[in-house]
Image 1: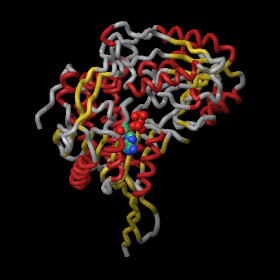
Image 2: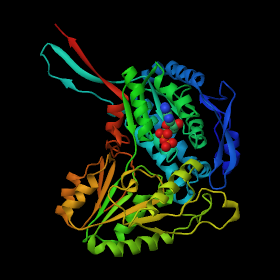
Image 3: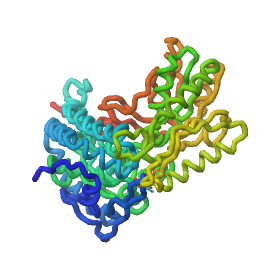
Image 4: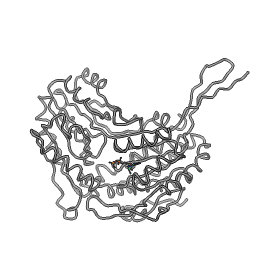
Amino acid sequence: MPQIQPTTDPHALARELSGKHLIDGSLVPAKSGKTFAVIYPATQEVVGEAALGDADDVAAAVEAAKRAQPAWARRSARERGKLVAECGRALQAHAEELGRLMALESGKALRTESRVEASVVADAFTFYGGLGSELKGESVPFSPDMMTVTTREPIGVVGAIIPWNVPMMLMAFKIAPALVAGNTVVVKSAEEAPFAVLRICQILNQVLPEGTFNMLSGFGPECGAPLVQHPDVGKVSFTGSVETGKAIYAMASEKLIPVTLELGGKSPMIVMDDADLERAVQGAITGMRFSRQGQSCTASSRIYVQDKLHDRFLDALVERVNKMKMGDPLAEETDIGSIVSQQQYDRVNSYIQIGRGEAGAEAHVCSELPEDPRLAKGFFVQPVVFTGLSDDSRLTTEEIFGPVACMYRFDDYEEVIQRANASEYGLAATIWTTDLKTALDATRRLEAGFVQVNQNLVVQPGLSYGGIKKSGLGREASLEAMLEHFTHKKTVIMNMT
Ligand code: ADP
């Protein structure tokens, strides 16, 4: 297989990858020959055309994955792991290129977001590559005359459906464990960001056998749904909206196959009076992911600050966010790029309008829109910190997926725990305090799958990540995610009498 050389021109790469799926080791057009436009959201310029997948393409990709699976599963787990780790090294060599391509198709700033994502992708492959020998079972003392053991078996063909906000990383956390566990994979990319993930597959193709992973681009109902419904797909791992997650759950229930669902969030951040103000403000900026225009499922979008600290916190937060530079996502000096699409831009702006219309609410608008005339048509939204919103405001209860932070004043710890938990979501939560007892109590009582004290890290290889309530089902990014979500347990009893 010829080695692919990294390139620095994302435009050329987007053109090169245009009109293609990756099926059975080859870049191929959609069976219908149709494509759809992909834009640079900072200018609305068309950067390429993605293959428009439908049920026929799904059939071809699943068939390739099914054909490749038995031979892949027959390799030892350590050997599969070694190959997956080798993918990690190949991806690291392409990290800069992948970051640039990501910035181009998603509008996420290169320095603060897209480049960072590309290196997490390589880490994810390296991490899972080392876990081949962990696919082990137990021996059970069932009877002195019998040998009883459990083994971990691959499921078969896994379908992975990914969103546009961190598509490379979310894909990596699905396909690396699925492959190490002995499955083969068909991925459906997000319509807004199909190229960087396709490039990843092209890179993996240098290392892994044909058909072990396949990638389709296309829209949800026409390409994603047939993948979930395909009779030979034995498991679906999905990240996206609650609404689509429910539709996928319903389709999977018809076939009675397992699903992993990583859905939305409305994550609370609690700042106690005794917190370190500087660290907490920085934590709010990181947690809100302003650098990604707030397009994060874990965004700390409800910030509860105790009475005495509230006003100082607000001033410091606004002052810091004001210093963040909005601009061309591909430029090194840019801190904040653009929103991904017209649809999301309109959605976010509609929430800002609702907030502005709410009695008692105040919008603190930060930073400056870019002045560059080339970016005049870009989907840029200035970060906003709202104060004075009610607890039943739509801005408090609904996921906005934009640079809109809602700040609330509170007096009493018991009260804030209740307000923090009064959400249909349960993905992430943070508490900022120097009091150990409060910190420990909060970690126990906050209803979320991922709780942090005095820090706001994002997904890390090795740490189980996932939500409760409407934030989803199952966990990703850890050893447990590989064992529980990409294998089934077989009990084997051998009678020696
Ligand atoms: P977002 O708001 O992030 O676009 P979606 O849940 O709509 O969230 O999309 C996430 C992924 O799910 C995308 O790849 C999209 O194409 C896919 N998708 C959307 N609708 C369906 C569906 N009915 N069946 C399968 N996949 C879908």
